[in-house]
Image (cartoon, rainbow over all chains, first blue to last red; front, side):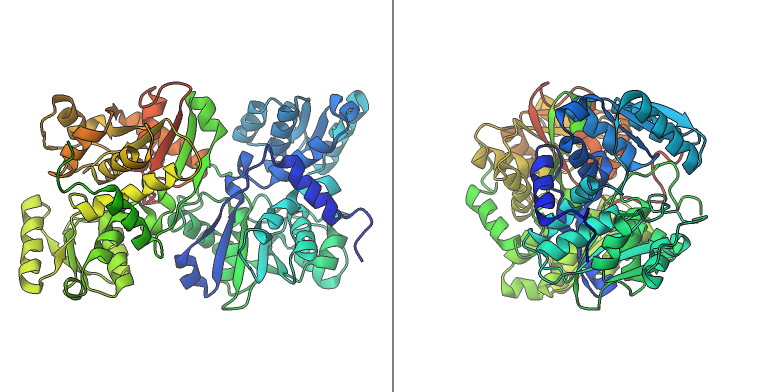
Length: 320
Length: 320
C-alpha cells in the first residue's frame, strides 16, 4: 500500500497546472543510432532542456507555488549543492520570495555562482550532513522559512511526477520508463504517474554500482543508507528518503546497477550522436541499456535524461 | 528577379512532403538566458538534432528522392568532406542506391568513418577543388551517377528551405530568421521560404569575418570567391554558388560578420546554458546577436543552429 503522504493522481495533475506557466514541457526525441545500438526503441525525455538544466525545477517550483501567502512571505530554505539548490532559488525568484540555501564550504565555485545568480542567499557550512541540517534548522528558527527538501517532500515528488505524465500523454506508448535513482524523488514521482496514468507501463530505476543504496534497499526490502559512494554521477550520491523509499517499494518494478565505464560511454553517445549535453547522472538510464539491462530487447523504452549540468572544462573523456 | 532555376513555393512544399517520412521536424526551443543575454527573444531551430546532425540531410534527401527510377539506379556522387557527405550517404542508403563520395586524402579519419558507416563508397583525391571536381567527373563518366552538389542545386536548396518553412508554420512569429552562410544553400532556401510563406519576416545571414566572401559579394553585389578562409567554423569555408548567389542578392536583407571569439563564446553558451551540442558554424548566428548584430533589440529572432558535428576530443575551449 502507498504511504498516506504519497501524492495522489489529483496532486500530480494539480502540480502540472501549477508549474505550467514556468516550466518547459520538454521535448521527447528519438535516435535511430540508439535504437540500433541498444536493440530497443529509445525515447529521450530531455530534462536536460528543463529550466536550470534539470527536472529538479519541476518539484521545487511546485513546492514554492504550493505555499500559502503567509508561508511564502517567510521564504524557503534547503541544503543542497546540486541542481535542487538552483531550482529552488529560481522558483523562489519567480514567486518573488526569499530563498536561503545552505551549501558546504567545499561546493564548487561554479555552483555557488549559479545559485547566487538566481538571487538566493547562501549560508556556508562544514561538508557534513549534520552541519547542513543544523544550519538549515537555525535559519528556520530565525526566519520561519519553509524547508523544501530535495526529494523527501510530497510537493516535490508530485512536481517530479509531471515529467512522466508528459511522456504518458505525448502519444508515445513506451513499455518501460527508465530513470536514474538518487534520493528517489524522480523515481517515486515517475512510478506514481505510471500507476495512475500509465496503463501498465513498467518503471525501472538505474543506479551506479558505486552508489547502490537503492538497489540494496529494494532487494532486501529494508532501508540501507548510502555510505561512501564512489561514482562520477554526482547527482546520485544521496540515500533514499523516508517517504520515497516506501513509494518505490510499492510502485517500482526493478532497480538495476551500472558500471562507471558504461555511464561515461552512455554520456559520450548522447553528446556525440544525439547532440545533447547530459550530465553523468542523466546518462545512467542509457548506461543500463548498453549493459542489456532495464528493458527487454525489442521494447519501447523512455529514458529520462535527468539533467545537463556539467563543467565543460572537466569532461570525463578529456582526462584520457 | 529570382533566377529561373530558383525553387518555387510548390517545389519547397513538395520537398517537405518528400522528406517527411525520413527527416525530423526538429524542435524549436527557447532560452530565457539567451533572451536576457541578447536583449532579443531568441528561438532556437535545432538542426543539430536533425539526422546526421545537420540540416544538410534535408537537401540531400530531397535530391535523392527527386531522382527518377532510372537515374537512381546509377547512384549519386558528390565531393565533400563535411556534413553533406554524410547526409548524401544516408539519403542514398535509405533509397537503397549507391553513393560515391570524393574526399580529400587529408579528411579527418572520424569523417571518413562516418561516411563509410552509412555505406558509401569513398574515392580519395588531392585536397584541391580541381582534384575533387576531376575525381567526381571521372566517376560520373564511368557510372552515370547523378551529381548532388552540396548547395548549388535547386533540389538541395528546396530541401534546406523546409527548415524555415517549419519555423514559419510552428505558430511562432519571428521578426527575423538568422542563419549562417557558407555556400548559400541554407541561406537561399531560408530566404525563399521567408518570401513565399513568411509574411514579411526578414532574413539575415551571419558569416565569420575570416571567411567573408558572402558579405563582400553581397555588399558590392558582385561575386567574390572565397580565398584562404581562416575560421573555426569549418562548415562555412566555401564560396557562394552560381545559383545561390543571385537568389541571396534578391531575397536576403543583410549579411553580417562575426569574430572568432564571438563564435567560441556563442558555442559555449549553447552547450553550457542550452545543453545543446552545436558545431562552430551553427553558433555563428548567436555570435552575431552577441555582437549586437543581425536583429533589432526587442525583436523575436529565430536562429538556425545548423549542425552539431564536433570532435569531442578537440573542443575550442579545452586548448586554453
